[in-house]
Amino acid sequence: MKNKKSLFITQAAVIAAIYVVLTVAISAFDLASGAIQVRISEALTVLPYFTPAAIPGLFAGCLISNTVTGCLPWDIVFGSIATLIGAIGTYSLRKVKWLAPVPPILANSIIVPFVLQYVYEFEGSYWYFMATVGAGEIISCGILGMLLLFALNKYKNVIFRQ
Image (cartoon, rainbow, N blue to C red):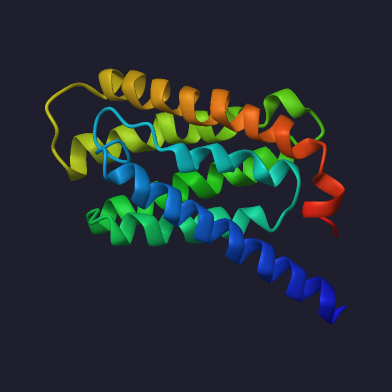
């Protein structure tokens, strides 16, 4: 029992750390935030397909990333909640591989535009931000995430053993 808890915590911590490193790295190219964002760390949101440890790992990783990259407090909260909702949705749909990226795409496409519009007061409509954030999420989660899912699927019993 103790070993299962340790494995869960370790998996969550590793996922959080990878999320932070990827987000900070892509921030150097100014792609991790703003109206047009392709946060490559969001590709990791398919990981709840393999393990429930990815849910707290992704949430913690997003929370830390948003903090260290200088996001405003409401963005830290609501951006991280969007990732959490997406991760829970992916875990809920884990029986259908092709649906893994859909919950994070939807959660971020719905929540983040409000943050851009009301927290950062960016010029533009909610629908514009929904389209730009959604496009970035399709690239990050839908394309990169599915590539990651298929690459890891072969090794899932080694990497994500229970």
